[in-house]
Length: 502
Image (tube, rainbow, N blue to C red; front, top):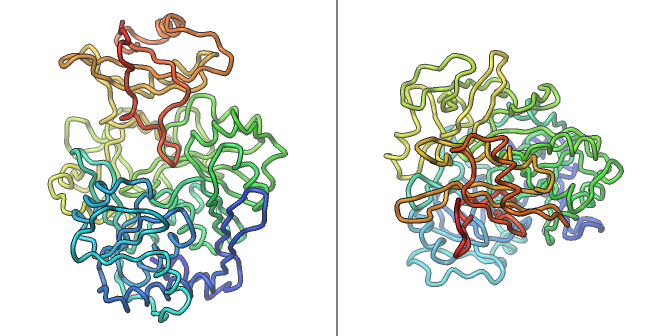
């Protein structure tokens, strides 16, 4: 994976910029890495890890800030045949200890003032000085002689149980990302990719680093304070031709940064994934900026596999089509491995032959068995595919809210309420009001200066939604809870004490 993403470009265009690190939006890059320097760095880290006594296949938990050291350590570990486990610097010590124990990690990389409390016996700790020493004077290794199905990296995601589960990816996963190059990005060697996410996310590691480097293009990372107003300035300052983020980032750029046509430099188009976009985002973005947005659907187990792009025109309501070479089907919710006819809704499935698909869930055979049906991997997305191959995403099966015996998608309710002229943002969730009673709740961020109350929303919903789909609790909030990458955290939506429900 490391040789594919970095080694080829280092051989063909060694002095081309591979990585620009921006610590301020309106200044020159604080770091510039050519492909030759990038390759030297990752191979020295590979050599340093080997010299420290780690053996091929050893898991290394990365808990660093979003800096170049994170990217270099991730690819350096892969280059040496080790298995990095990228995590967030925001994890608590308790969460880190669980990941160390569950993964069997032999080492952890900690940055700055990060602490994890008491460390399990036998876990080697690398700090910022250790990493800097490897980069400065560590022995330079050769790329490990790995096979396509050898482990490359392990990333943890929410599971069907209370604890997160590890998704183990193969070295071939980088090769399996090729359908995205023209099926979503339209990327070439002279592009510059700026990603708004953090490195603990496969969306960022793949779209922000792996794919630009595999195409000989330049990756741009930002290490400063992230506020919505910074992104248009960074796009213009860095000469970014491609920008990637979750829908919330684009909405915030329009709302708070007032992004317009003249603000985005040479940006060609935006790339969006991670959650369903709010209604009107495509139209508002294109009207204000003059650039298209291309959406993709993905998951930790395979990254993106459905998208629109320069060669796949967007169709309202659809995410896009299967990327070139991907084999998709819709299977019945109740079970079975026979694809449903075009237009019927069910669970979206990817063929198990896809090289981008995970090796499996780490030490979770019971959960792994649940996602395979014959030759298909079923990840839990509800969808329908029309006769022309466009995929219409209906949300996650496990996000469905239950009301009066009916299953209701939060996306459907959110789309209806978002049409209200005084609603800036909305998120819906099923919330428990008594031990035996759950209701649909809508959490709404009003537009600035709007005069709106719950009765306005109730009347509006009554005109657009069946009775069982209407929210019984309406909560006005200043902001929706989001992850560091901008995704809505439905699990954090809570009713305030004393709120009555209809």
